[in-house]
Length: 73
Image 1 (cartoon, rainbow, N blue to C red):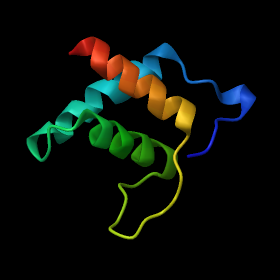
Image 2 (tube, rainbow, N blue to C red):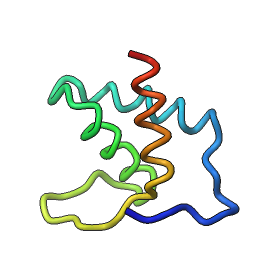
Image 3 (cartoon, rainbow, N blue to C red):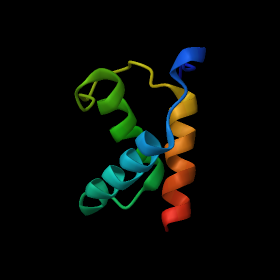
């Protein structure tokens, strides 16, 4: 995973929106870690990952989204 550049610290609004969006993937797998990674990947790269997609996602953003998702329950 990659770190976010210092000038692109995720906003609370972005983190909350992505945490909510991660719930949309619960229909296919109720795995918060996977689902948060999917939405962060889509946010960072504009598309969901393909089977062989090895691009990194911003680790700080992923961890923030995962923490917010856990707060939401």
